[in-house]
Image (tube, rainbow, N blue to C red; front, side):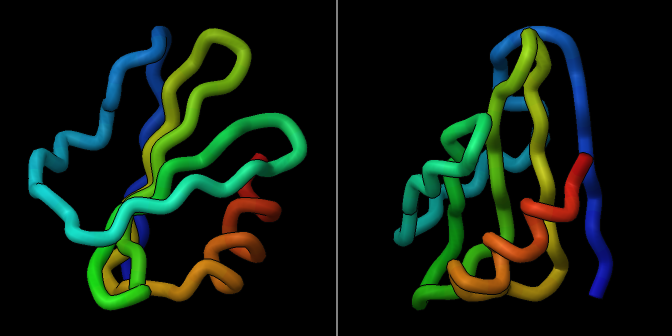
Amino acid sequence: MTALLRKSQGTEDNSGDFNRYPDVETLTMADADVTLKGADGRFTLALWQKDGFSYSLNLSQGQNIESWVEILCSVK
């Protein structure tokens, strides 16, 4: 599995991913709301903002919500 993490100033989507996803969920984490995008309960893209920066994390293989929680808790 490969991952692409992006960080940029501002609040705009910095993922470069303009696909439409049938599944969109919001996770409320300790310090940010994270939008997950994917299909069939498997999510490949996460977007969030924190402290004036935008973040995106794109995974080559879709993960369920529980796996995303673990992954996002490890992102510093």
